[in-house]
Length: 296
Ligand code: HEM
Image (cartoon, rainbow, N blue to C red; front, side, top):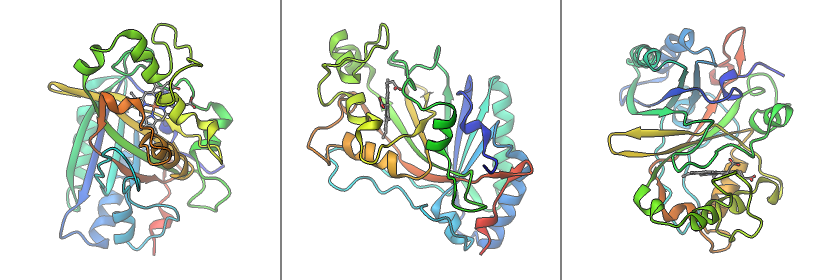
């Protein structure tokens, strides 16, 4: 398989910053490509994972089959805001201090063509829990199954080894959540917080019942690399799912949204997405991002 951005496969780091950028109004194909060239030395695919938005690929005249903007879900019974961006950087570190410099260098490198849209500070909680205390990532595919779920294969050089990522910043209402008795919280997720056991008799609205990956046709596996985030008094989960296409995420979100059977995922009773965006994470070649699909 062609080289991948290794950070996608690795366990989540202790600290992270997610940066999104939009194109400056005066940016053209030339300035955008120059800015991309300027950040290439900073993107090793491990400490910095990079994703490109549909608007950027279109501007430079490239072609990435399957890449498009996130547009919510037709028939959704809940709000699914879209916040498209041209560029997405996931900076991953064990030391918080290093992130400050990484983010600064990235912002500086692309400044001629891109304006900063959002910075999100994220962190690992315990062994990888959501801020509600529930273990997150238990049913993630592993090893060969993770590679099969998250990376394009058999589609040719430039596309093989790449990944399509869906991101959503969810804000939790902790007061609402904490007002629920433990059994109700467990039923909402579909797992017991105390021992992470799946509840066979959980209601249809339980999050893990809505998203059970083998219960879609075809099966809908993704590699989730979500991290808790906080900013002043607000906090939640920065949901991140890598796939070989957007199919699996879209199938899961459609079922969560109630568009399929009128049952909305119980997560929405205490948490809401504030953003939603799609990006394409190019493969690597010789230690650098392989951007051949961007050349018209
Ligand atoms: C507030 C946002 C969210 C929270 C707190 C959350 C939390 C969790 C937790 C605690 C689990 C159970 C353990 C595990 O297998 O990881 C889980 C499972 C899962 N979640 Fe989420 N999640 C959120 C949003 C989403 C979204 C937006 C999607 C996809 C559209 C999603 C897809 C999944 C999938 C695929 C599973 C595994 C289901 C299975 O195959 O058993 N989650 N989530």
